[in-house]
Length: 80
Length: 204
Image (cartoon, rainbow over all chains, first blue to last red; front, side, top):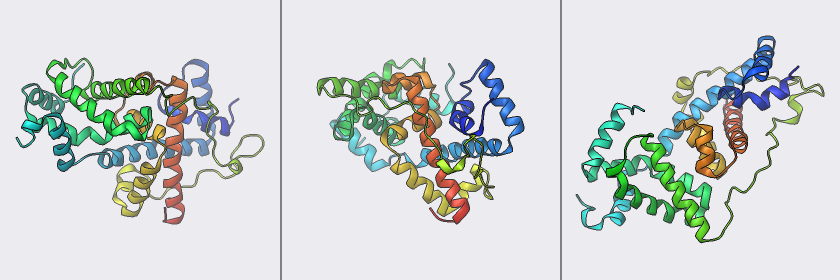
């Protein structure tokens, strides 16, 4: 029977649907009886979603960066 | 595979040789390609590798067939450039082999039987939408994303932002799938710890 510590190690894989068969059943059974692990999974999933939404904005370039890189690829057309 | 309408329009313009569309592509993807390059080849060569990748993308874009998403295609190109540079420099990947021991939460979270002693606390701000409206929390998460180790940043980017499969990510970064899963879990745990700390204290 899975304990809470073991579940927290498997939580990301559970979010990514990496478990099948018996392991998946074991996880579902544990989540049915453990509200703390349900909360842990929910928090991990929301952290992932929030981090991804922010990363999408954070990891973007700007026009000046694009102009500079493009000018190295194609010096003759950098201003067009 | 069908591409999103925005992607299709951008690809149409790129294939017609529209340089403004290409600059738009650079603006959207350069920091992401840089993260992937840095994870494979290290900081010293990453800028150079990414510039080479942009040249390759520029030359090849007319032949892009849309069998994968534009993102997957470009990341494959930067990944190939980075691996090739790595071979030329005869260096080992900056990733190396990571231990496959699972990341752990604080040891005092559980008792000897593996059950919670300090269970997760309730979050008042409990949806991504609400979290993104909190300026201070945004700042905390941005800081965490910025200081994540390069391998965690790359895996988090490829999985949770670009939504590539674990198998594809493993191939792109020359890692085993098991390693990708461990690294991804570490990145997500780090984000969760940051958010949890803010929810409990109101500080980063």
